[in-house]
Length: 335
Image 1 (cartoon, rainbow, N blue to C red):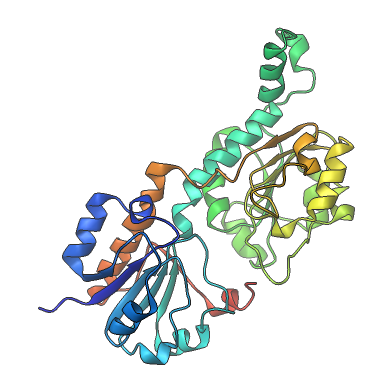
Image 2: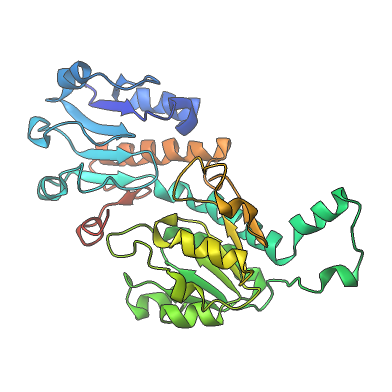
């Protein structure tokens, strides 16, 4: 039986970053793999298979008119988020039943773990304690913990209650934290069913000891967390910027941190690499991480495993179940 053609073009990521050798071998057993190199796929190579390609495993979305791809059944994004409507014709995808799939669920466990680790480091002041040791100024036992706190029974706020939040919620369960949730994309009943307490954004900021920013970027939430809202955060609360800096007025956040209004852990920035002279670098009570939460070598292979699993299902006439399926109500809100 003739195999279906599938483009493998995760560039700018090398294939072995997103797929183990075992899953790459599975892919070759399942389909006729086109390209699969660690460099951009040339336009003439794309043109050669446009009429036959069944699926595209990709780090890009601009493969030309979908009308020229009559056999296309899936666009499998391998970068972490659904393509922008500016570069992908979602209307045609939905009309033709072309699945637009994102590997975002692969990032949830490792990003959640990093988020929890950073917050514990801030709450227990690990970095300050380490720096004091280096300077020979360490303080022992009880006097060293006057401004530290544990997570046990603390009220936690989630801004966003999607897949990443669900992974993080499971990690927080041993700490018995009531979890307040602000997510305008979900009805209150769904938030409650998921174990969250629905609240408005101002209440979440004012009453949470730890605040996790977990929302994906949208056309509606650009710089949603401005100076007025950020100023509502409790003194010595921990503000964890984990998903995207898009949702925060980063200049206002930086200014408030320099005033020591609250603590922060930050893994994402409005410009990366961050300029050497950016004032956030010297903000007190702040732990900075260079967008490292979702880039652990071994765990990135889950991207390829999920993609091959879903491809196998679709080849058998079954729906994909592991990657995140684009929904019309959501993608129209993407920037």
